[in-house]
Image (cartoon, rainbow over all chains, first blue to last red):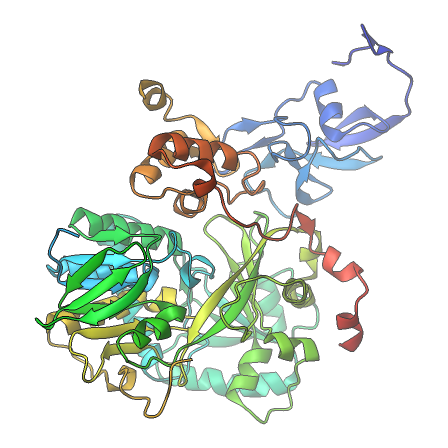
Length: 103
Length: 394
Length: 100
């Protein structure tokens, strides 16, 4: 897991409830209260979608919910901003290819 | 300014730019003037449709056929698809009353060459899996297509400029005078004057005020249409969608099909079309509010509720923008195209209501033929600016 | 100037994937406000509706044409302020809905 467990200023990482999410068909664990983007990066996934025109990989860019680079298809709904959307138990998250696909 | 001109085109929307291009291609020296920026009028606030299904027999339908052929040739000439797409269209039917009227309408349309059919609920759902359960039937036609207005206008501009066409923006026309040598002098806001033997009034919703400058009458009334844009999403079914409800009340004035109070007030009818960018343009309203281009909460909510009634799945889709355009409406629903009696060299090419994108090429070609004195196959009396009798400018 | 031509392939509008080169070409073709460039190139029409790129495009136009920023930026903005789900129109109670 790519997590900072002992931050030089913020101190040690507190315990948190485990949340189970499914990312591209693979079961992963996340921390309760964290954003989808954080959970994915912690699990080593940096590419969240591929662009429509140039098929280029995108992940976090602004991190504050404005730029829409980080969007993925979540529970069947496309264009979800993962940097400002909290994880939930059983959430189904998919890398969005272009505009995505309806389920 | 310095250059001698043959034609001044007032209005740089799709009609003005198309006309400027066709005139330039026919050897004329043309300046196109616009009071605003690129696509500031209805051309920049519309859906992209070249629509056959909503039309009754007559000149509008014939011109739509011819215009589509012209677009296909332009796509080849320009080596530019301009985002042309042929998704087809379905007019959704909700009850037996609508079905009866649409059955008749489809029969009529087929009798004059439109390739359109009626399909049942099952087949409708095959083409549009997300349709609400209450849709009982639909029309289906692959004749309806679309082309992106911004790409078209940019192409006309680029191709025209390469041949010498001038485009001047953000400089509106404030006066038009007749000179001793019978030329027209067109004066813009910054004082620049453009002199030419011919002036084309292609100012869309603003055509009446241009006509007033020369004492002519152009009875065009602005009719606002609001559109709500969705975020880019995967395609919703195969075709674009309209609803029969509104069409039916137009076809049969005494029909028992009732519109809700809100639908009447806003003139709401469904138009659900996929844009070049993969967003959905959802509309639309028909409001007489003068030249007010605001979008309103009532209009936006009305459009959203209308859309969700037919496509409940859209409730999870986000909207990113709303826009409004002013359709130039004429008293008889036909465009105004021709030279004004008693005003040699002053032409109007305006009043396309909701069909400006579809009819731009044929309008431009006919207008150019008129100005150049070329032989024209069809009679244009039905479209003449002199047909209105006692009308006045609004 | 030479920096710009080297970086023509740089993305300015990330949502619609519009490059610096396309924007410079549009400016040179006479599209000299943010609204004009948007309509001519789609830059600013994407998911973020210009939040990431419009200010940058305004500066590019201003630098290239010499026009001051306030002549280049849009004068007004349209609803919605930020994206909203269509279901939001259903949830509110209002006089309109009670009539129909």
